[in-house]
Image (tube, rainbow, N blue to C red; front, side, top):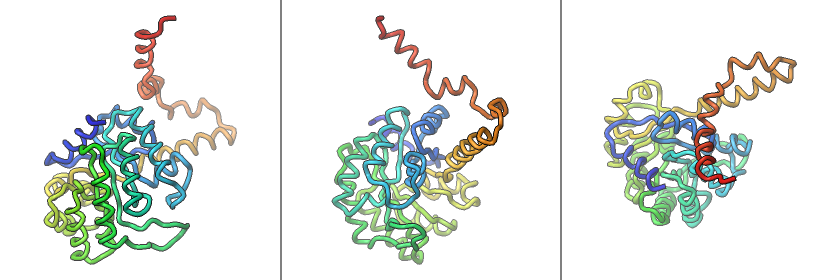
Length: 286
């Protein structure tokens, strides 16, 4: 665990911008590890669908997320940053959430300021008050058992407020002891430049506009240490499963699907066949 957290901190401290792998389960985390991604990110929305087949509303509890994180960190040696949502309640709930998620082996825990929806098609509920969110972030920082665990303040203030109000929130979050700021809803270069001037902390950004996503030098120059591209692998996996099942249900042959399947060698690498054969040879005495 400490090694994964050290790697994550190294990424935050470098002057470059690192592309994270948006994973959704232990299998995708294992593949990201094989491809040498330095950071993996688990978002709340995809982990709910991938592991529980549920939509992104409050039907999932903290223990569900802890279970997924534990299975990921046990099977893949990755520096895992995950979406801790609102901490699953008030500041006291945040304390327990951080302790449980930290024990599951994550490297970084995001606590966001957006009020989570409680039913389908609900209008945006806005953000928790600045004072309440500051208290939750301070509680998250204090709850850490391992000081190497990174607490990330996630905010959608740029999408909710005028720039000056959003910057005031970001400044206040930066003084809570968190060690990175996550920007959601970033739209313009001017916003990013203003945030970079407002906080000394490294930034992480999800799905910035193409004119920024395609300019890693600009992102790095404005304090962005980690950038994420959304969840294309997750969407492709759902489509591939659906297409293959439908093909067979409609009477198609297994042979027709063979060109689109992973090779036996790739499957062998993903499931670590050789590693387990080595363990058998080393320890089995029968």
